[in-house]
Amino acid sequence: IAAVDMLEQALSSSVVSISRQESDIENIRKSLFDLVETVEKKYTNSCYHNFYHAVDRMQLLYAIIAKYDLTGRMKSQTPFLLLFLSLCLDIGHPSGASIESLHEQGLFLKYNCLADFHIQEIETIVSSHAFFSNYTCEQLRTELIHLCRDLLNPGKEPQYLTEGSKIPNEVVNSDHLKILLRIADSANIVRPFTDAQIWSAAMTTEKHAVKLVRTNNKLTADTVEEFNNQLQLAQRNTRKILTFDMAVDLGHLSLDFVQEELKPLISQLRKLDKRFAKEYEHKMKVNTFQLLQNSKFHLQSDAAGLLSCSA
Image: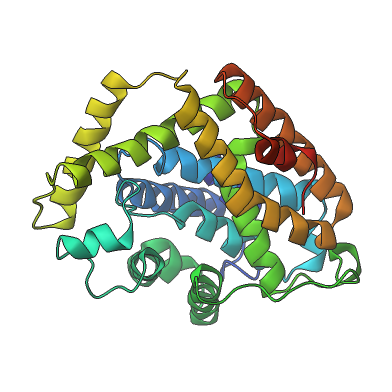
């Protein structure tokens, strides 16, 4: 319901191609609800890369757009398109497995990366779902597909942003959108600590399960569905032997995530909007430090450096 509400709030006359009469609004909401359910069914029951993570990411993106008044700096249809893509970003995600492990099983061979798979899944929904065919024009659907390929393409990194490239002073372009989408994808690290800890444990479980099945050579799937089922069984078994206070696992995972993903993003984000970057970085530091403390992780000099200031 929350996902439907956010999409509905982002609707504009440039998204739907019919008049906004009372009967239309009711029918549009019903169609949006079915669209969200369609997306949800394509997600797996993985510990981390599941539909709840998708809505979590979408909610943070929605909050960013609203709090920092970005709608006035985007085309009127962009908030809806961006929110929809954020909901679909990990659609069909194979439980944290890498593309290499998928290729080892003879699966996903036609994809160079998981993003290619996600893009095709999104394109299938856009081309087949009644919401898009009944309520949007062909031009908007084409724009959505192009935006999807642009933002999800891992080979196309955002251009380096100069200090003068700030959101308040210019129209938000595709490079900005890609950074905002990545920031939203890290929503778990800036949630209240009790929630952030659960997300970290879920990611740890997912990573351990993939390592477990690969080490034991127990992946014998012939289809993507079988592959996901085997990995999710491994996750259930992993949860039986892991606890949330596994110091080294949760600590190292958090440090790796901060170092490899968040520090570069925050550095770019600071060039977009210093106020937003400062608030995000503060919440990230507080949660990371609490997680490491609660995990009884021994902070080394490099770990302390990660928490002191961002590059």
